[in-house]
Image: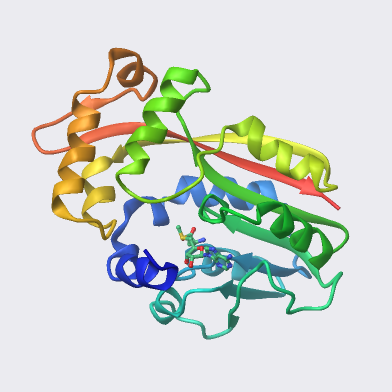
Length: 244
Ligand SMILES: C[S@@+](CC[C@H](N)C(=O)[O-])C[C@H]1O[C@@H](n2cnc3c(N)ncnc32)[C@H](O)[C@@H]1O
């Protein structure tokens, strides 16, 4: 599917996704950023602006960038600079930002992720910080990673990162002092996630069935709880930081 149509469909229900507003996840990202009140921050793949809005009170200014007008149209941008642009393309001068943040964006970048890391590196001031938050499989066990990858194939075309792979992108593209914090979102509702994913009903049911009938090893590492009409899991998210 063409990217803008994908995001157009997803934008309709995006803000109903519980995880986008999960305060513990947002707080963990803010902690990892270590903001200063004078910081100029770039929120890459800002979407409808959940992260940009949480950051704004703590810093001097937030620039919110996204290459989907459908997603940007659902946000409120008073007090921000919002820009429709692809992060892979040059738009700002180098050395401009104190922090660059990207939550749940880089798994959507398939063919030029190294270039995007280099762009982020160049956009940072010396000693600036890149903060990337991504959902990852609940463990690095190859069987679990394979189940997670197979499950996501029914939802969207995407990368599946393990924490080590994401750290590798930072290290090979020049970042120093790379650190990885793990954040668990407890009781993540698969039903809410699927109903607001923009995918067809039959695929939603297929993915729900995969969870309900997952191998015991997957259920265990997900701390899965199956209720009458939902399935709750503990998701593993990593917040990786690297300094220029
Ligand atoms: C899952 S949403 C995350 C939105 C927001 N960061 C959040 O955490 O709620 C991913 C966003 O990344 C944007 N995106 C994907 N690839 C991009 C690129 N190359 N340049 C800019 N934005 C991109 C999409 O349009 C989408 O709005």
